[in-house]
Each structure stands twice: as structure tokens, then as C-alpha cells.
Amino acid sequence: MNLDNVSFTPIEMPLSLRLKRVYRADYWDRICTALVYMAYTGISTAQDLKHLLAIRYKINPQSHSLSRLVYQSLPEGGMVNKLSFPLGKRSKLTVLTLTDYGKKIAESLGFPPVESDYERILRLHDGMNQPKHTAQILFTAYQARLRGLQVSVMPFELDDRQPWFRPDLIIRDQHKGYAVEVESHYRNKPEKWLNKREANVVLPHPITRRAVVSRLKALHVPGRATDLKTLAQNARRGDLRYFWLERW
Image 1 (cartoon, helix red, strand yellow):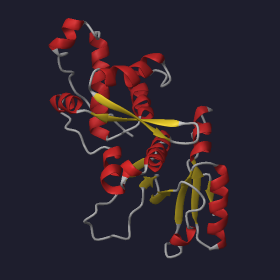
Image 2 (cartoon, rainbow, N blue to C red):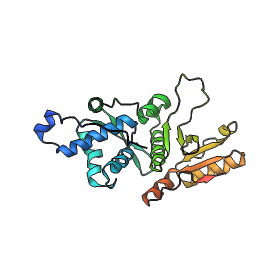
Image 3 (cartoon, rainbow, N blue to C red):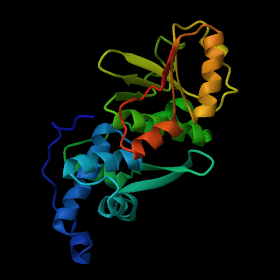
Image 4 (cartoon, one colour):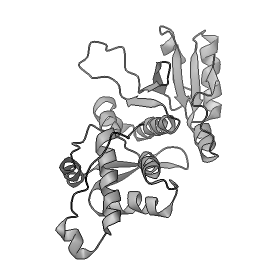
């Protein structure tokens, strides 16, 4: 995600915060940057935001200062809502949304907020009633962006003329875009891809990935597959070479 063309002049810190001496001036600049990035890109995970800020300020995305800004300062300052969604059996995903106050600051900086990834899932995919699936879609988008890929979440509208085209994501590399489905478990019927040219699937972990790939191969449906557990493990080791782990 290229943000080289994103520039702004930080607004003056609100009087109420200056009087309380809540933030230093340089820290307020970072808060403004975080709000602009959320408004401009529509990113919705804490990991996405930390990654972009780490690039901007040339610091480690796991640094304490970034974690404090994203997980503490923004929510406690009333600028974002911090939500927690189940991602796996023992893991959760932190989702951030701009509050009205946060949106107002972003607008005053010249960046009226676009519809966020999370808001699109709520509106187009019943995201509120599928919290785990919502988290998996957002985490997939994060892992793809981490590897330099372009991502569109819920790349359709309910009133368009292609009601058969409802992928969870479009993920683009330098060659083409892939319509991607994020599946929660292997029991989802791969037969739904029989009438499609290819299947591009994301599964929670290697066991379900191998099971789904085996069934798709038996159906002679070509495609690609990856899983979130392996992507996350590779990213922690600094290995960002591959998003798709299998092709057939």
C-alpha cells in the first residue's frame, strides 16, 4: 500500500487536550497520521495501522510506543472504537473503527473517511452475525498487504448486475487479480466452484487447507490456496515471500 502521495499539515491540538497536557506535540502529529491513514485507506485492523505507521516513522511495528498509540491513546482519546473478534481457538483480532470525533479530525486534516473494510463487511456480508468470518477476512487482507499485494474487501455492491459475483476479497499481484473466498472450515462444500474457472481459497490452518485442496483437485477445479496460521508464522519469522502456498 503506497502512501507516498498522502501529505497533510497537522491541525493544532484541541484546547482540552493541551490544557490536560495529554500529548506532546510530536505525539499528537503521530495521532493525526494514524487517523489520516485510517480515513484514507479504510484499513480496520490494529496490525494494518501499526504496519503503516512503522513504515512512516521507520520504527519496529512491535515497538511499545506504537502499541501504546494504537491500542491505548486512540481509543482512550475517543478517536477510535476498539473491538475484539475471535480469529482462532486461542487468538483474537483487534479491529479499529473511527468514531465521529475521529472522523471529524480526519476531515479537518483534508481526508474525509472512505468506507472502511469492516464497515463494508457489516453492510454487504452480515459481518455482525459472523464475527469469526469477519475477523478472518480482515486478517487475510492484512497478510496480503503485508506482502505488497493490493486488496479490495467485499468488491461488489448489492445492486450491481453481477449477483453471482460475491467474493470476500479481490487480491491483486503485478499480473492479475484473484477473486478470493475465505473459508472457515473444510466442511464448506467445494462443489460450489464447479461452475467457476478457478478456486482461490483461504483456510484457517494447514489441516483444513490440505483437506479442501484435496477435494478441489478431485473435482478437477484448478486454483490456489493458503492458510492464515502459516502466513502468520511466516510473517513472524520475517518471511513475506509467498501469499499463496499451493497452486494446482
